[in-house]
Image (tube, rainbow, N blue to C red; front, side, top):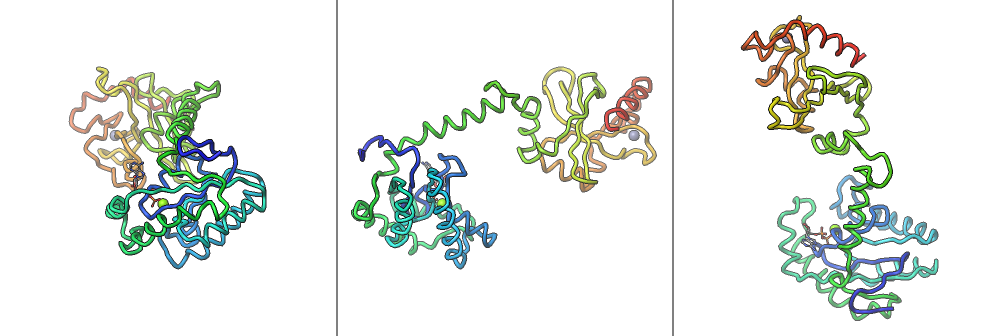
Length: 320
Ligand SMILES: Nc1ncnc2c1ncn2[C@@H]1O[C@H](COP(=O)(O)OP(=O)(O)O)[C@@H](O)[C@H]1O
Ligand SMILES: [Mg+2]
Ligand SMILES: [Zn+2]
């Protein structure tokens, strides 16, 4: 039942966040799984490419209502991330839930006006809400509170009294444990490191080349490929040989010292920006390129002709 502290939210229901821009609704909404959150900003973005585009609000609201209806029919927990300070908006949402016998929860995000206003500052210009608009949203939020029960909400609660940090951390923890393979699954293994360096989006394109151990015997070769475009990378374990820097990645570049060079020129990459530069040629001639034939181009003794031949054979195998 409705309790001011630690309310028992229904396992599946309609959760309507109510608050001015900058109150922290979207931050709170992120404590639920993304698939459960219907965000008006998000849908404005889907429709117009611009989440802050006001002339897309009507279209976005139409889509939101359609999805809500379908989710309620499936009895799925759904969180509405929008200001929801207008009674007419809330009534439509509640009606959708009631049509399907789903419980309704109003969550009032009653952050002080001064905080809501201050939070507009750091936002990009096209996401910033005008002061007078935030002010009237805040006023409407305050006024909403006394009407929510009459509107049919089964539970009315202030956001501050929702204990959402715990389920949020639980979900993050489960995802992390799964990445690490501690949940009995496979885990990401070496891809954890790839993700840390280059971000999660790279993972589906990342392919280790089996049976390659270039240079130190422990290095591994990988490829990032999409169609014809690709990068070849080597995973370096113990980069500088003395354990100061335990691991890293090098990317394969054209040899800057001799266009006919049959060796492999490698340069360290630390970020997805480096990958972009390597692909576009912006890294060609970078000062930290080391070629298996020419070394760093300064000291010829870096090149070891015997191991080089072996490396070339390994490389040919690796990227074949
Ligand atoms: N509980 C919180 N603690 C600290 N900062 C927060 C909290 N909730 C939100 N914020 C900050 O306030 C800003 C606006 O939050 P947001 O969730 O986007 O608001 P809304 O969706 O209501 O417009 C964000 O930059 C966020 O980091
Ligand atoms: Mg928001
Ligand atoms: Zn070379």
